Image 1 (cartoon, helix red, strand yellow):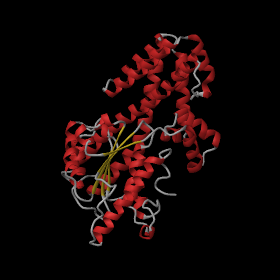
Image 2 (cartoon, one colour):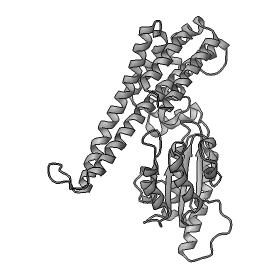
Image 3 (spheres, helix red, strand yellow):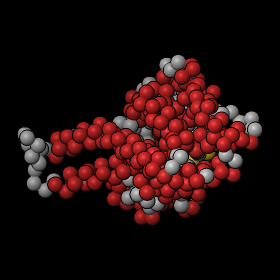
Image 4 (cartoon, one colour):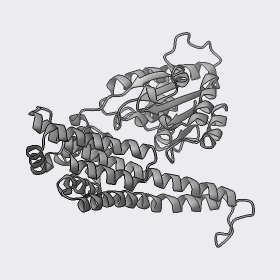
Length: 401
């Protein structure tokens, strides 16, 4: 096992990152020994990882961060960094390494106040690792101010600082930022590769793994959740039944409410798991007295945490809705494939009766309009339209066809 093993179907990307990690190791080793630095190096101070959802952008960036922090003794014997077992690799992969700082969007944007401490830290030397690494998981969500803060740090980085930015596409990142990054494009892994990973790493039964990989069309994390979480399978099954229920206006409104309520329940469950733990940890760090009473002057810190948790709940609800919308899109894509006699593999083979019924009862033009209606709902949610209004408009459009 190495840090690259979880990058499903990304052999070329793994090779590029492995070569850069070897050169990065040589740079640090030469500097520590006060030797001349290598003249040619594949390592650079800023990287941009792009690719479709589920391709593993964040996983690739984190694996690279682990390889850069690798302290395995085998390196000195000619081995490649990224063993996956040493303290540097292990803590970087878990997200607990002191010199690997992760920034992710809590709400719809990464605010400049959320970036200030990270940008300041990027100008400091590593505390105990080999590199100071800043991993921005949602670079497309940087707003104007936070993007400008990142630009200043990327333009003139500290000698041992590396920026790893992840976004769906190059166009999602400011031209001034992406021009200073080395760009790597990840591809959607094949269904077979994802199924093999679920069997090999998670111990999933081959039939279950194949069904999950096929249903999610190569989206690694969604496939894993679908294969391991019975509740996720139940929610997907409910979504796939929705197209046959939209026979009148009241049914459309009820279906929309159910989708929004299910997403809200997902967000609530996550909040219950994370919010209480975060609140108690912060209170302990602030020196709360017995009974939970906080020292004077710390109310603002607690208020900031509550605001962050509220933004995260909103985003989690919208992310859960987006998963449902993705399932609906795949469903109608299968309907269209049947209508056109395409040889494209059906993703939702467990819903063949519903697919056949809709394919026979409508025309391809109607199916395309329904797919467009789902896309319009996604765009509305991105513009912060109230979820229920956006989903109600979509279900009404699905009924109209």
